[in-house]
Length: 100
Image 1 (cartoon, rainbow, N blue to C red):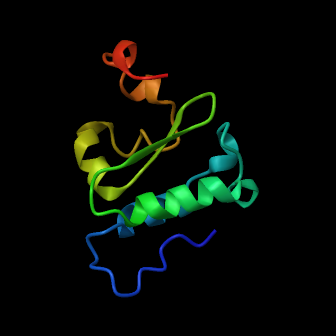
Image 2: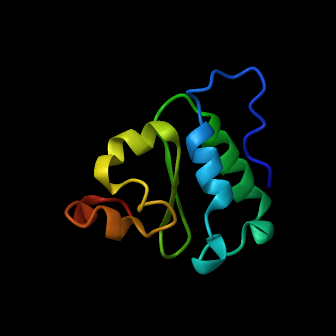
């Protein structure tokens, strides 16, 4: 996966999280190594990372979070620890109202 082919896009749209997503040890999570990701996940992550609005993708049975720069601002102090972690660990106070 080569997220971040950012030609022609303003720098505020994704560079920090593109690098973090590339560098993250996904093999240590239930999502698995990035080289083994299905095309659907790669496409969704690419779209999300290039989006100009806050987006968080929740993947798999463990509801692992992958998010963009704008969503990192929403996370505040929960970022960067939230990347690659279950949403239930990031938002325990709201988990009872989040769709499952």
